[in-house]
Amino acid sequence: MPDDDPLDDLDVPEDPLADLDRATEQLTVRSEERRYGKTMVIIEGFEGDTDRESLASELKSALGTGGTVKEGHIELQGDHEERVRELLEENGYSIRG
Image 1 (cartoon, rainbow, N blue to C red):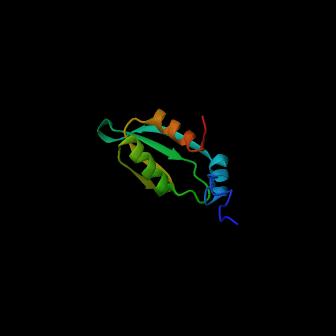
Image 2 (image 1 turned 45 degrees about the vertical axis):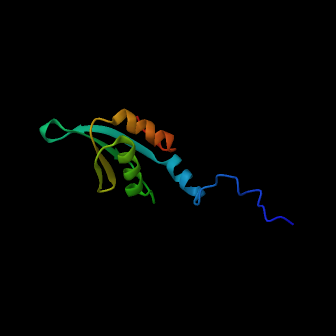
Image 3 (image 1 turned 90 degrees about the vertical axis):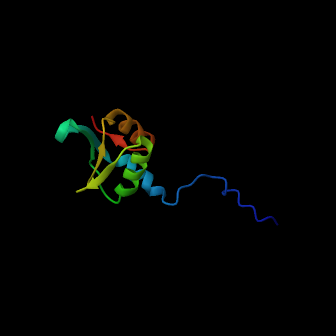
């Protein structure tokens, strides 16, 4: 009898409930002008066990910019608000407003 598992080809995440957490969170994405006219994109509204460090790293890589995680929100350098919204929606997050 072959050892082939018919479910091996399915793309099932290690934590299927993580997708549910993403779908139920309502994130807010806004731009804010800082010192010297520098623009920052602020992502707020995280609940539960969302790995903000990992998400921030993915967003920074995709945008080619710097940023940080502070006090429960993500800050990204530059005027990338629209692109951040697109990336978050592609990853299953719901954006408010």
